[in-house]
Image (cartoon, rainbow, N blue to C red; front, side):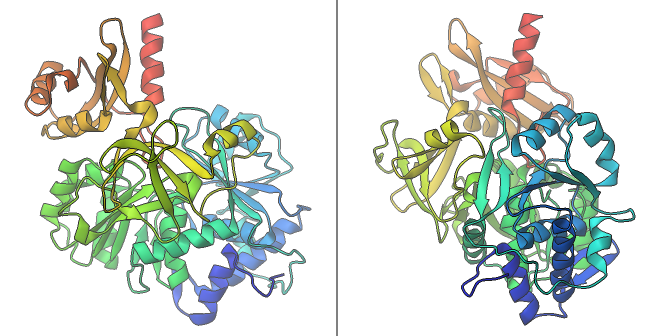
Length: 508
């Protein structure tokens, strides 16, 4: 039941369906959904969830890869007054158990291919429903039957609609409590900052369990009435092929996908002329990779998107016209976000000085689920403290230096890991790199690089290369050649795993 002034996530789809009922909203695999069909599907699925005996505010976990069923499940939760809990499909069974137990989820909606992992987690919930590909699935329930006129639940914009779990790069994931009001404001900020248009023809390849894939790209594009193409996973050959075949106009990828795509042989042979907008974010884009993509696709407009789960997640954007003058910047704050850069005492730092970026915004979460101490630590003095170390110039442009926890103290001098990573990325053999500080008796912390290479190169070669562009104290003391870097599916490298692995090796 909607109020007179309703502004909920589910209302977004209903309003687009009213304007464009017969326009295709979503394509996935061999299926397509008009806006009217998608709106009806969300209502049917919402009714099916409520018939399980769920109450308003109950948590419903969704454990699956990208699909039309995944989107419908999210919209159904929003319409039914339930709290959606997106789950990373790459989690170990122990990590999965933690999220389900910490959130108190009563229901799990799961891809059949992942059901075994769910069973092995040992978590007991009231109900487990398949998302798709089987009888009685969410997709089947949503596809046919009566559309309920009234779900007998009143959803308010201040109600929780999702627990967005943080990436857990430095600690256990925390569930950011997002309201309908926060996400609708986030959609508006995105539409303005990214100039989302109904004729952009976007493709969505990054996981929808991540806030960027769902809330910066898919939902805002559904709000403006675009026709979105959704694929199950960010497979590079499939992305390049579909851009050519379906004349895709807009594409978001995390830097960990843009990096190998920029090196892929088909980048030079596919017709990508339809592509007009390229979005990147979720982690720092190496500047050499950005330049490589710009050289191959000079007409492509690049948007740098920065933020974090707690703010929905978009906080700043660097637009296409701003890239030439400020390629290292992630732009200025979006429509509904106010930012400051402060020192350890909470005082504003002068333009160009290092400090922590803090936010004030209706997009912000209301806190962390069942974690009052962490909530109090993050929300203080009327601002949300991000943990990101940045510089802001006199015009309000932000340049991210590092996570505060990732700044390296070497010999009493602070060094940003990103600066060292960018230097190593200029070596032609380097595919991926992560730099951390490791305990050292002489240096306090030794700059240590983990590097994935595409051809034969030695640790000494890479150290020598770094010396050509970095001051001596910034050059890595140690380089480890590794086959891959640990990262989550949102594109963030898990530096805590690198530290833990080194500690374990030292102990052995």
